[in-house]
Image 1 (cartoon, helix red, strand yellow):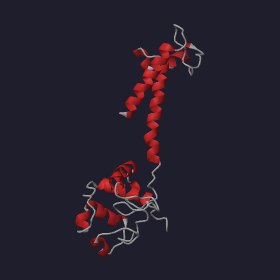
Image 2 (cartoon, rainbow, N blue to C red; image 1 turned 90 degrees about the vertical axis):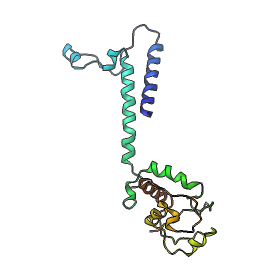
Image 3 (cartoon, one colour; image 1 turned 135 degrees about the vertical axis):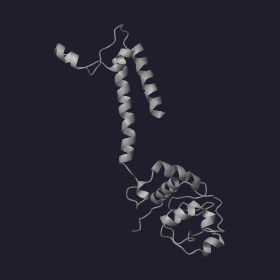
Length: 199
């Protein structure tokens, strides 16, 4: 949809420029078209397809440029995997999905180092930390009595069903039902919480 909108805007802008630019009745030649040296060369280069539909060569070039920009965006984003240094399976998670899913967490949890607590404890440095150990946070008895370290797998179990994983905890959140959302949000928390920095 974004690509279609961008192409529509580009086409409208190019048509506006073609209609208003220059004051001349004749369309200006395409700026990048080299002069033809012979009749054979002129036949070898077909006119742009859109020019036959009533569009100017400039419009066709503007649309082609917009397509090139639109096509390069996702490919470049795929090449730059911010989770690549994380252990499997989190190294293949989707960053945008993780960031979007984390919005469910941020009303109760902060993740920045030293930012303090909200309704839930700060998540910075949570991995390889014993459960119930954030200074200044008032944990439920269930969490105070629990005996495990936070790992990505423990967080996976917790997020699938917090009350099923540890009955009696005070977290009112029902959990993250979709496995791909859990994987992505765990990868996002790992990245933002300083996972592996102490190693």
